[in-house]
Amino acid sequence: MQYPVNRRDFVAAATAAGVALATHGAVAAAPAADKPAILGGKKTRTQAFPAWPIMDAREEKSMLTTLRSGRWFRGNGTNVSKFEQSFARLSGAKHCVATNGGTTALIAALGALEIGPGDEVIVTPYTFIATINSILMHYALPVLVDIDPETYQIDPAKIEAAITDRTAAILPVHIGGNVADLDTILTVARKHKLPVIEDCCQAHVAQWRHRSVGTWGTVGCFSFQVSKNLCSGEGGAVLTDDNELAERIYAFHNNCRARTVINYNFSYTPTRAGNFRMTEFQGGLLMAQMTRLEQQSRTREENAAYLTELLRQVPGIKPCKMYAGCTRNNYHLYMFRYDAQKWAGLPRDKFVAALEAEGIPSSGGYSPVPWSAFLQKALGTRAARRVFPASVIDAWAGRCAVPQHERLCAEGVWFSQTLLLGTRADMDQVAAAIRKLHAHAGELAHAAARA
Ligand SMILES: *Cc1c(COP(=O)(O)O)cnc(C)c1O
Image (cartoon, rainbow, N blue to C red; front, side, top):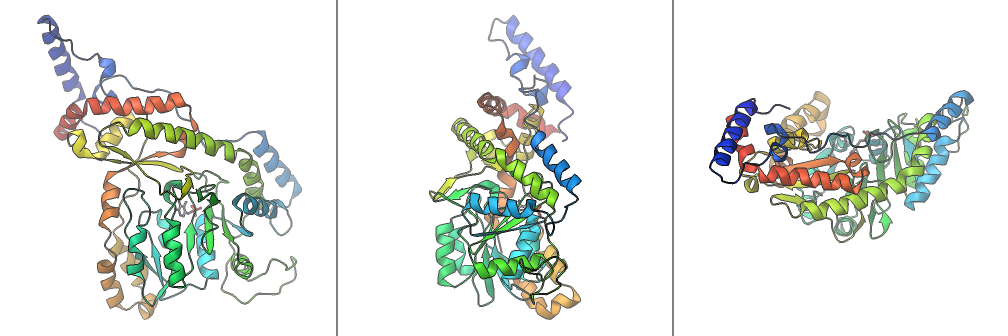
């Protein structure tokens, strides 16, 4: 991250000013320790935050046991089925089908719901691109609905206006582990008889009205990619309470083969399908990782609540809010909006760089995608044009304007979930670093403008 090289000049000037003031018997300039690290002051924090993923003898034992058993495939091992049962029980869902990723969990769910070419799927733009890709993989059209900047989630009041006779599903994302307004989404979905696919890839153990996310919609999709709060390198799962749909999802992820089919009995369920199976190594790792999930989630929740109290008091820092129905946030991300106006015009990215220099890693989060060009590429091919005439693609940008999303991309700041796994004293340090930067916002903005 680049920052003004004139740090040296600034320090020299500041020191000279301090000396001048001191000789006049006036207030001495702030000691270097109070200065932002990026302007030559002392770093607020030198230790690293907890490393991720977390593992111990539980994971080692599981990996070795699976390795030595030679049962590496769900067809001859039991880890994946055990994990499916555990994850379904944990979430309160009737069925769980494990997959090899969150993206493939979404693709399998959409496939089993028979979403295909020409269909429209309503989705939030403020998400990891995998959500959008899962729709495009079926040659369906992602219809973007703008977000609610207070919660970062899809704006529930704007969904109904986006529904057309081609709409085949609503795909809300519980971004950051915070929960979308499921009451309103489900009411609209019921009224228009549309399935709801919950993207819970960042929201394991998050709850809406004291019940797990992923059990409110028709299906819920999870990711266990290594950055997620429950992880196995790669991995995913689909939850559903619908018996028949569960079998279709299973067949979709297992090359048309039903759950009951014995390994070398090649009988098929007629369906579109692929191989999205989870390996026994992943299933075993997840069982071990699950033993820590509840405690880790509690730590994150407690630290996040405490941090929010501290950050609320800093001008221009607006922690992300939750809807009343969100009874548990999983805090895959700790998100807040940064208002440069209250920071002497210091740009968001310069704030992130200054915070990084203090020893507090953060990120500006998702950047806006050049959606029109993206869709032109994805759906402008020879084959896709048979389904989507140029007029549909051309009209798309007008239908899917998302100004609040773009603003959030410019104002958002994230801490990763691992920062929340530290102690309360760590949270004090995070807030202290931000307060220190705010006290020097004018100098930081000045230095940034000269860069
Ligand atoms: C991680 C993620 C996915 C994709 O999951 P993978 O396991 O990486 O394929 C989808 N949606 C969201 C919101 C995610 O964060």
